[in-house]
Image 1 (cartoon, rainbow, N blue to C red):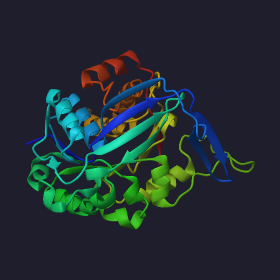
Image 2 (tube, helix red, strand yellow):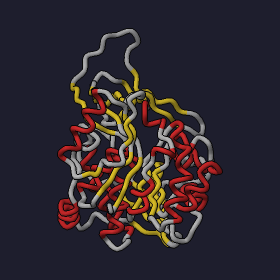
Image 3 (cartoon, helix red, strand yellow):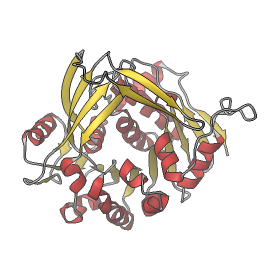
Length: 349
């Protein structure tokens, strides 16, 4: 029996760091978007290059194990040099891989991560086997025996297994944390309703929450000012739309803007933990999985759990790799004790 079992993607990631990448901002009346650009037709020199494993399934399983939880993983790979690299990676990690799916006729997921001088990134992703997980391939016994099922973002056809595994977990009393993926979110709130209804913890970033609920975050205007508020009223509306049951905790992350949570009684806000930023890849996985683990460690204390998650994700963004910089609980607690003023702000409903 494992404390937690994760299901999600597995990839081989190649990181490319280039100071010549330009950030281009495009603004509309109610929307702002930013693009990473390179001179068209140019040969661009890179500053640094590295490869590592990644994907939500790998990142979160690695983090849970590093935090001291007995961990199993479900992900799908091909039979190629990239899958060999993934299996080699786990030789030094205490993760149960007995439920991993390997298909000789498929390819392992592969990503190229373009990192800007600001530390943010654009990902060129080939889903490969990650998008082809079938219900018949999933080890449901492993899910039944776990205390927590952590669902990392799934893409493509793999989204079709979500209802089945969430229903199974609910029927067998398994705690569920759901980190929604873009494929499912683009299909709308009704598509995700069954999963959201049974998940005990739901984690999305601000853009995903807006996409799922159809609620746009209004900017400040002459007539209305929101920047002074702890929780933007549109964020509150998102929380209300995403929460279906009294026992649920909804978390909305905002990258460098921190993270918010709602438990039905209080809204919580935690700023980012201060530190260097080299690459943001894997920060969301580290945050969400640490939050889930910390709720158990700190007896469901949301404030402490948000702080712990922010500290651990700050360690990840300081390094060049989605699983580099992960901290143990002992290291996280030490940083909490060294920074007693780093706390959450709370607003009662």
